[in-house]
Image (cartoon, rainbow, N blue to C red; front, side, top):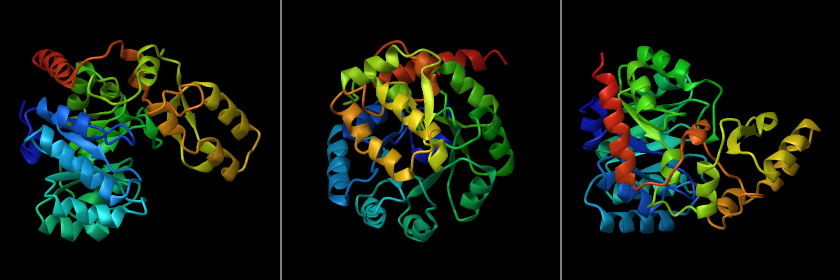
Length: 308
């Protein structure tokens, strides 16, 4: 299936792996790219030397293109912005801020820039400043979320911009891919589905929590602080939501989640850790390799789309 996104990224399939903090490291990114998708290394809040090491390890595992997700609120964002140029990264996604100050440098280096957006206004702004495509992420996604759903946001942005739209949030199988395609997307980004991939370094406790998740197990914390985050229910989320209800301060709530994602991903603490996952978790019932995931999604999507 060729689209403007597969041409832009030089990949076989229009599937991008989400740049998830602590999850999207070199093993996963390389495996997705080897399977024909576009893998991402999540820079998150890591210093540049760590990101450089991840990039070089990924290059040892695949000759196919992969990218880096840059969180622009990261204190090290400027160093990483320069690093992707030095390491000849072909494409990047950005979040948590606007990439405008780095755009000229990246474009001069031939880097494709794909910001993650959660509104029509931001999508238009990114197109004006030179973005090559946008990831349109609905609130069904895991982790930090906006306020609009994928179903409503994708077609509005597809109508509003001329650059390619990549749909994200609540997409985990071929049906989701086909739905995104019909809404105007030319590719999808998946996060939660790849968390349980065989090549993912995520602790087995975390993977099993996703696999056992029911449709009602997803909750959103941090709405009172203006920084909503979607996670799976556990003891920590129960206590957090109760404190929010009682009007706890931002500082008290932040302290509760300090290091909580690492605790879940690396240590496997799915009781006190932050088990970030999208609403699609209830649909995921097994571990698979990245290649199996991508081929299954594409085969199902192509069968559905050929109906029309």
